[in-house]
Length: 451
Image 1 (cartoon, rainbow, N blue to C red):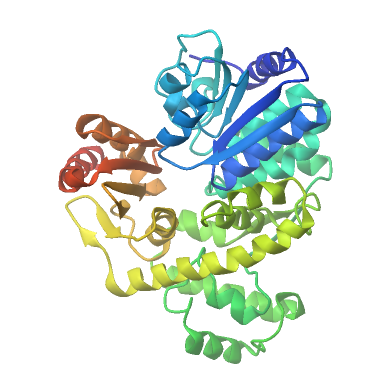
Image 2 (image 1 turned 180 degrees about the vertical axis):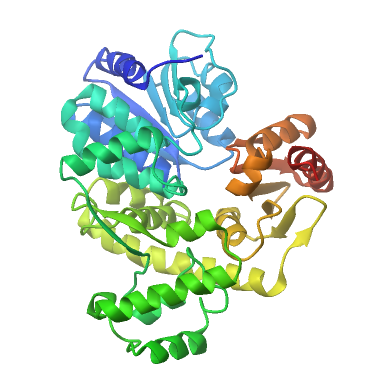
């Protein structure tokens, strides 16, 4: 099935505008950076039109959250960065619903007319790389009012949070990027990702990119900075350009020696984009990291949304949350670097005491700690369930890896919920079926990548 995002967005806008202004519209989105920015874009667009809204950020599995929605009395629910994988439940909610999603869909056609689905993958746009929940939400927002074009930096921060810059910005995301640059909404510069109060902090807490043997290693960092002639207490802006270039080259060469994949190396020193429309003129990836930390730290999801809505006090609070979150990620990565992971024929896996942290660690470790030959799984045991997050890489996807299909297939066979993208997915399974899950995952992925 082929379609046009612009035309679909206009139809979604018509549904919204046909709703009386006295209606409070429900907004439901995912809790990561892409989901938070997607929700914020929809909320801002609704507010500008005079609608009240009630927003909720959910994490996988969405079962309990969707059950709560059934008990509510809603006239219209807008799902952003989710919904296509839950369409059968959404059809049973008894109200109008708009789905704006880039994940793999269950079915292309909806059975009930009151549910309207926009999915990038149904429109010839690759939801893994070319469009995110936020950029699709931006399409709907601009269909509602052309003035919402100013939300482009938020949309691109969402796509950045989903790592859609790897391999270069392309597809629908690039259309938005090119327009934002032409209109002066973004400024660009080439450089490396370093942020912190001092250069020492920036290196010590650098988790993505993660520099094996350097990140979290005080002695090694001091040795490197001393060799280049940089005071460890200097702010990044105080470092002279020549020394900054030497440091960047050193870090890149370090990753090359560690066997980091070329497509990941290409993201280390690359074009980066800043916007004054994001808190304190943030760079897109830095802003996305901040939102991810809020969404995945217990009790702080609403803080990330407040940041996107422009609350300056929330931005300062979010930075404190992020620092604690990065410390947790750092500790988990250092442990994984030291101890390694369990292995089967076609997968690697490790255990995490927190599923959100495990998913982030998984995505970083597969690029910087392990070689490219096997996908990496994080398994978190919680009460009577296991929460699985898994990550692949472009090398494996090109060989046939489809983690979204694997998680969906396994969970349907042994009970539970699962799905996602080819390169990143997740599942929730009964804890008693953990071993069966591992066996099935090994079997399906062995077939996919022909091991």
